[in-house]
Length: 284
Image (cartoon, rainbow, N blue to C red; front, side, top):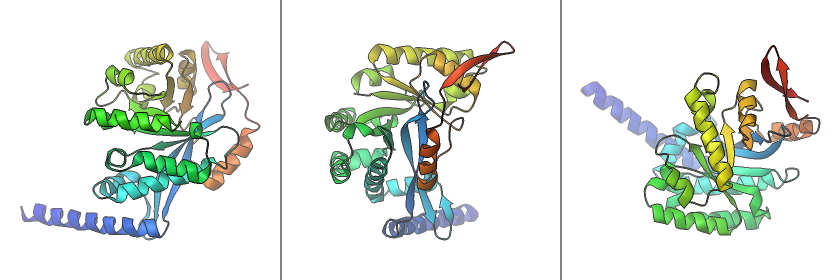
């Protein structure tokens, strides 16, 4: 029992230390965003970039989000961090070519516990980014409690002209009623279904159903966690609208992103070819 109590004390001290360091990280500009492409199945080129938070701690090194976001959510820090991430993402997107969209994940606590509509409006006004180039991703857990309040906030965000996506669809509390009730423009299908494409007929059937649902409701379908040519071939066959995963690119920092856009100019469309009775995907 004494060991357990000592461990609890150590965990609490570590939590308090991280919280204090998080406050300093905001002032010291230790956060950065990296961007993972979402590509078109027709061209293989990026149509969106998902912004992912990173903390470059001066001593600990790179601290993953799953370690510091829960701590930030237990204090008001998540609102400040979330506000910064939206503004930074809009600033970055303003420098990108064409109509490439930036997608930002919203924390439940930031969404429900702050003036999220004001933060988004502020970022758009300060950067001059066209609202249709900002996509906000929320998870299903956000919709479980305070459903009416969440709906009101989403409608207010939609009125700004931004796009709303439901992230990790198919996990946890999945309910088709959410799709009908809330104003989603896109659905991001959880990677667990994409992982099952090669060996799980049930996963393939669910993906077909989700794709058909999206088509009937005019909702874009995004497949995340795409890692193989076989997955790409299947997802193209059911008319998914965007692909995201290591098959195309890992998350990129600002410098690598500039090189990515430059290299994209020579990217060829993805096409299916027949090899030994199997269809695979390669550049045209």
